[in-house]
Amino acid sequence: MQIMVYGEAHFHQFQLELMQESHWLGLSKFLTNYIDNEGFRDFWDREKHSFSKEYSAWINDRLTAKES
Image (cartoon, rainbow, N blue to C red; front, side, top):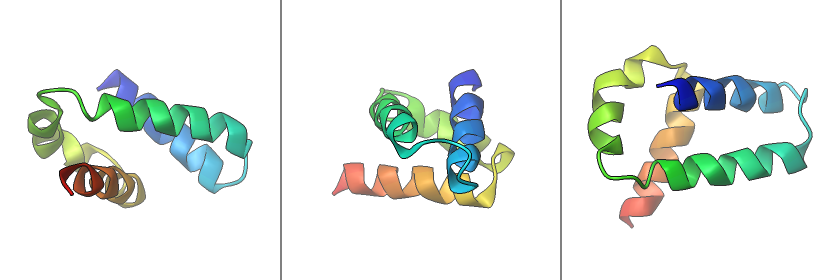
């Protein structure tokens, strides 16, 4: 949960142009790899309601891309 909350804070900072793209790219790659972990889908199905609509959509896009 802490990693996802940390990711959401940085996601919004980047969306508000308060973070350089180069910093966001590194973190977004880390998050994309993190959601590849076994068990993440179970966590996400339980906890996705705890996050903003925009961040949840971003995570869901990566999960969908992973399944393709």
